[in-house]
Image (cartoon, rainbow, N blue to C red):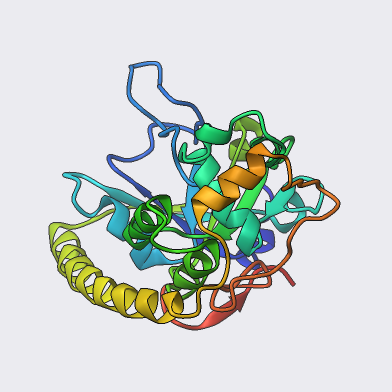
Length: 267
């Protein structure tokens, strides 16, 4: 290992594992012993997922029997403009929809192909974290209950931190695991209780903000977007990538640690 002092200055991000990592970090659908390592229909596709919000990462695995939490760092020279995709608001929205299979009805269109190839040749992807609230947004968006504008504003209201995804085995091999900690039964219990409370609060807040933004009637419904995509009136190219950021999300300049204090991502 290189001088540890070089890594102390790097940001610490987290990974929640259902039963712990067996050996080096791996990327793939199924391991040698037929255990699922990574789900396919995730926000940014197949990859090794890490997050800047400790509680959110814990919440993903707090209902498992023997979960583990890992502290991980990425040496700063690994993240470059060439090998990393940082998702702005619009690209994040439709890239997640693409990876979760919601754009299949317009497969073959310019719109679809743009998102199908958005992360080509990228080693890392950085973007906002989606949770159960996002599922409610998808359901409303898919049923034409809300427009794309309302969809993006609603996601903007919930700051769950940033997720960093290693998209290749090469990218995984360069991650540095700083610590491995088994989650105690007491910590799992507290996390579950907190998750239930936060879930109810977020649902109420979601309903309130959805009604508020719906009054404005800005943006387009998904059926309208699909219609335009089929007519090729929506043409996307990589020279015209939306760079709008979620106003409440701390993107790569800063991240959050276990508390609320911001720390620099890279000096």
